[in-house]
Image 1 (spheres, rainbow, N blue to C red):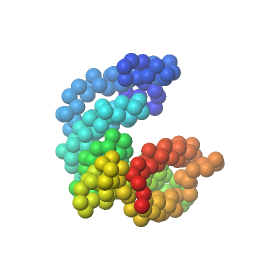
Image 2 (cartoon, rainbow, N blue to C red):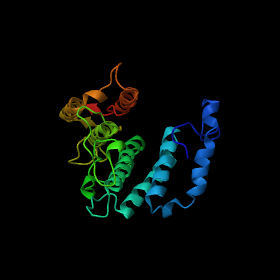
Image 3 (cartoon, rainbow, N blue to C red):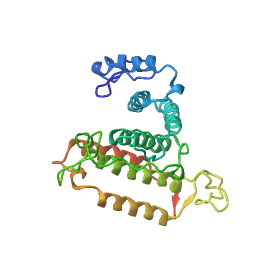
Image 4 (cartoon, rainbow, N blue to C red):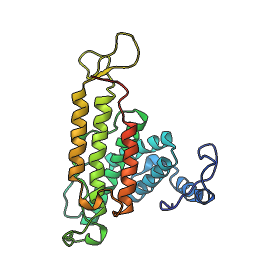
Length: 256
């Protein structure tokens, strides 16, 4: 399956406005689905990584419902394989350890994002996880024997990846505090209006706390990954995507 290029054809799930180049890549997705016919039997790292690419395809084509279904399978496969645990063992090489970290946290970050879009609860919670975030070095510094220290000032893609993890946690707090599930119940963060409509009161201090946490997150962002005209294109895309994410998370309740 080819993640780097567009790969789907027009049909009921793929709108007509996509380009012909995009349509020509559907064979990669189709091939992946044929190979992964029984996704419930995903029990090894190669199969799990292929499933992750399938999920990314569904997310990229806005097929969020199927994306969420496959995401649940991938996350439970992680649990079955023990990827949510940090298991120090002499036979686990640095490459294997980093692969376990990266695959697990990619899936977990998609859980944060897709669950927020669909309004569903998270599939996994922090108290169930002790797997550290990936080490902030790129592949060329990781060998079978050790993780070498890169030269000072060398940026790593995984600095942005780990920063993204923090942003997804803030998004989870937005969903929890601004869109409380039990807003109408006594003692819940929100309070239902007497008119019987679906609006509810939100304490402004909660919004301020989230804004402060977002500002703190931005202050900790490495200089290389701060969005700017001279910075890497990945940072520009990163900022654009999460501007939309922030707009999607605007409060619908009444702020007091």
